[in-house]
Image 1 (cartoon, helix red, strand yellow):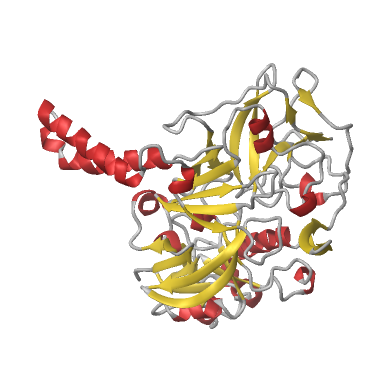
Image 2 (cartoon, helix red, strand yellow):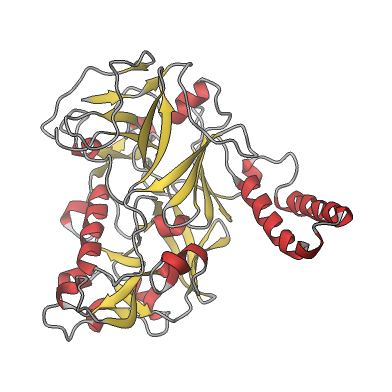
Length: 462
C-alpha cells in the first residue's frame, strides 16, 4: 500500500532547537554505517554499489513541455513504479527520524534528493519502519494500491527535490513536506540544509540552517584552548566572551539571514529542471585549476564523486603516483577488469588537496592527512580513500589478501551518458557530487516560491 503523507495542523514533529530556532533540525544517520573502514577495499562490492547508484539516474528522461525542457519519470504514477516502491530502507541511504501523527509514531524517514514527494510504503514484510494508519487520526491517504513487491521493506520517503517545471516530477497529489510546514507556519523559509558531521551522522534542517551554531561552536573551541589556563579568572572569562562576540559578529553579522551566510549559485544554469543541478566553474588539484565549467548534480545518497568518461583521467593525472586500478592489479590473472575499470588509485601516504569551485569559492573535497573520526575509523588515504587495494583474486576481502601501498580513490568514473539506457536522461558529461562532497560543508537549498522565484544552492565551509 502506498500512502501520501499529509499532516493536519496538530501533527507532531520531534526536532532539536538550535540558535536558529525558526526551523526544524533533525539528526541524520547513514544506513549500514560508514562506507569505508580500516579494511581492504572490496572492489566487487564497490562496483555493485556503483551500478545501483547509476541506475537511479536512468529512471528519468527529458521531455519538452511548451518552451521548456523538463525531467519526467519512466514509470507512471501507479503501483508499478519500482522507483517509489524500492527506495526505503536501502543500505547506504541517509535517513532521519520523525515523530508524527496523533497518537505520535516514530518513523525512520529516508532522504531523497531526486524526488519531491513525501510518502509511506507499507508492505507485508517485517522489515523497515511502519506507519500504523489504523490508529492514527491525523493522516489523509490515497486509496491503497497493492503491489507484487510485498516483501520489500516498509518505510517513509522524504523528497527534497524541487517539484520541477509544471510539477513534472510530482507523482502524488500531496504537497511537499516543506510546503506543508510552511502552510502550517511551522517554518518561515522554503529551504532545507544538509550538514554531514562525519561519515555516518549529520543534521537535516528544514526552514533554517545551523550556520550560527556551527560557527559559535568552532569559535568557542578555538578560544577555549587559548584561555585554557585562565578560565578560573572572571576577567579572563569576560575577555574570552568578548572575543567570541567579535568573531561571531564577523562570521555571522547580527540580524543577517541565511541569504547572507552562504555563497549562492542558481539551480539549473542550462540544466534540465527538476533536480539540484548547477555549474562547477573549476576543479583544483594542489592549487592548480585542471578543469573548468562542469555541470554537476548534488545527491547525498551517492557514496562517490562520479566523474564523466574522459574527464576523470585529467583529475588523476594531476595527482602524483595515481593510476587506474586495472593497471595496479593487471598482473593478477583472476582480476575482474569490468570491476576495476571505473576505479582509480593513488599512493595512500600522499597528501591530497582537491577543491571544487562553485559560486566563485573553492570548497574542499579532501585534504590529507586524515583527522578526527576518519583517523580513528576511516580507511587509509583519509576522506579521499575507499580502502587499500587488495591483491587477492577477484578483489574480494579475504584472510590471505595482500594489500598494496595504493588506495582506491573516491572519485569514480561513470558511464552515464554513454550507454544506451542513459541517452534520454541528460546525464552525459554530468558530475554527481555525492556524500563525500557534503562532508564539512553546509549545503543549503532555497527552493524558491510559487511566484516563480527560482531555486538556488548555498554553500559554506564548516
